[in-house]
Length: 280
Image (cartoon, rainbow, N blue to C red; front, top):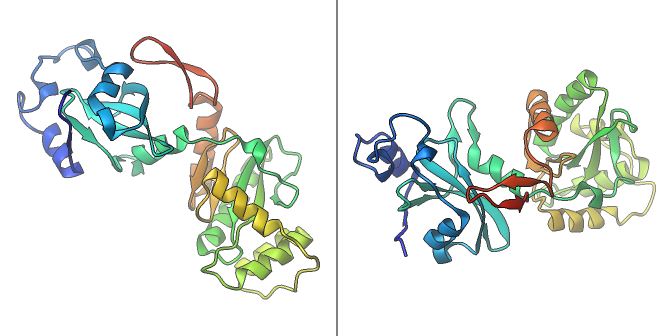
């Protein structure tokens, strides 16, 4: 069994900028051609290296970071990426940040791995922003008193104006930290009124609910089941669950990636050991 050491990100940076010969992956003379011409890592080998640190290994690929493998693993019921260096001695967990785009490669891969089936989300209670018949539907879990939901709302409007084929289906998920949000959410559900939601974001008072509904409890149960823990959270047509505020351009990039960048759930992709594996 190869011994595995855990590194902080500072340790990783130190390894990457060390002089030739200081790290295992830099001492083998791969100055020409692709590093993968010299270095290989199969799923079975990754499973052997990582041992009991993970519950299973799903796939292996070259990471965007030079000198590292990206390994999709299972741990305590979740799928997540870890990074293994070419010497197969060091494993890195946590956020790996692309400074060019200021995005977390780890978080983006986690989102990609933990897709859901969007068809499990009922939309009868949703407030619609855009054309209800639009072919592209993005589900948004929203809180009528959430400041980041308020910030997201105009970005959704911008995107719908640019892309009439996109509509947002907004489901109410009031958080306990906003004690008056629940009653407002019930009123919005009863009326299915986008204007009432916008009035709440504007700080206006809302009328009392005009019906009795248990929809919020149903939404809470659904959110727990599919891994929605905060508002706003967007669920894209390809099943990616993306938490937090995103501007219109970022939402559009997620849509474009789903249309052509990542394999949909159930598709096959080539693993490093040459076998075909179902995409998560």
